[in-house]
Length: 155
Image 1 (cartoon, rainbow, N blue to C red):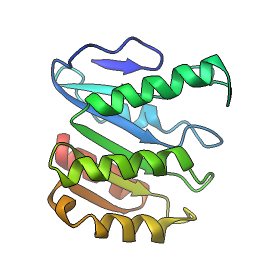
Image 2 (image 1 turned 90 degrees about the horizontal axis):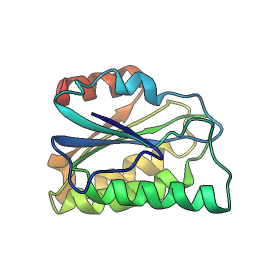
Image 3 (image 1 turned 135 degrees about the vertical axis):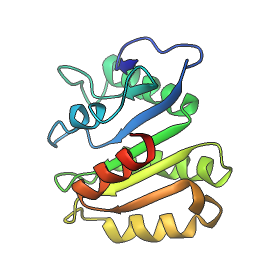
């Protein structure tokens, strides 16, 4: 099943759940291409990209942040894409949280980034420092490799 912000989230997911994390603001809409990689009869996919977007502050922004926080705390898998168009500060924060969960072996992550993403080096170092998470994190540069990693893991 597909859950898209601001759809209500279930109390518990019925299947393995996968959150699609990464750039939303000031970058192309890439999430729909990733959703197509999953069989929605087998996986519960959580897409935070909201139709029409949302403001940076105010009630809608708070609703979005709360929705993402709740979804990230529930899922057992997560994919992160870092595009070149934006720094993705919130996604970097969320990745830190999810790397900690991966180090406790409670979530599996796939992390990808555009070759021109401005903090690619930082991503690589932080992921490598999460030594207890190594068996639970697959990472590397490039869109094609990112999609291959997803398909290989959940396809």
